[in-house]
Picture 1 (cartoon, rainbow, N blue to C red):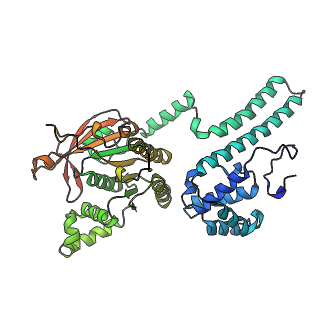
Picture 2: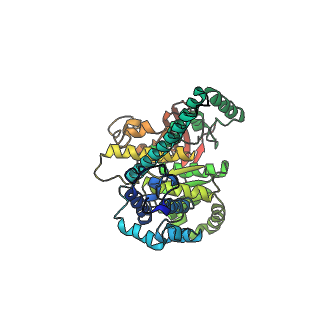
Picture 3: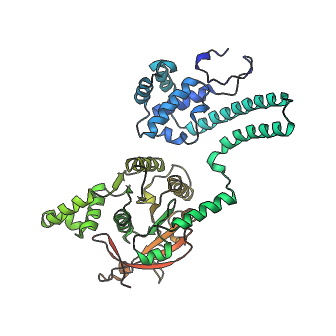
Length: 449
């Protein structure tokens, strides 16, 4: 018998000591230790590693504690996991506090936790296959059942294993199901993008679509941040939907001063330097701002994992719904050391797109462009100027590039801004929209028709 018979998961096909089911106890222990040691480790395995995959039942209880805490946006450290297990009368069943402390003590780091999770899942799939194989053997002995029915049952059992393995990553839809779903969406008007009233731009983009990654690209001082603040304000006030703004570059108070300028119409610099002169407008504006469904995640160098965690938290705090995420901007997200810069930038862009797809929300990603157009007569940007990686263009669903001629002409009376849609996978159209902008108040307005 297994030395930890009481702690072994219920599945035990007939075997001798020399023929144990596939398992890797050391990998299971390293995963659990890593989760309690590294606060970000759980995010790297929670989507790929199931509770049932652990061979030792004590390990499955510990992992269940960690995943439950993570889903509630609580830490998964030693103390938190211990408290959860104790509260659910499971602490003694897993071997007590000493068991948990031993797991942490044996773990150096969580650097290989992804590979270990894949290894544990592989062993679990093999155990599932063995179990199904034994069941198919029993079906073969059921001679009273017609062979076609036995073969169908056997195929279904094997398919259950392969289907669980591929899960959502390999879902195949029938024409009937797709047709019904498409008809329902068209009938309800759910295929159209959400519109905030920026008609010139929305005539090209079709509006704001869920699960989309929209790259907003421009040179410095063209107005990327102002554009995103103004768009966020429109989403909150016109659509009534919450917004999360990720700001690696700007302090949250500076960002909120710009949002306050958008609300009040008072120049952002005046808000910060001549507060008393505009105190009445500022006080009223603050009263309006605190009522907005507005959250800011401020971090000087957030990883995509940290951004994903912030998105999940915002969604939970907004009762499971969010209108958009703005990330300002791509080049402030740290690259992995030693890698090819273009590849790493493309990798980060794909990871941000995955956030949009997995949560079915639009994500707007600010992006700096190269200044390669400085020596040409036409200073308007194009997709070839995307800094560090043309893969940004390949990954995004929409690319909107900003251009203000006044930056080059020094004409302060020129308030126009060009919104050049260089890619539009969502709606198909390309073109240039023209709006009026007041960067002192982060306000974007339609041109008079």
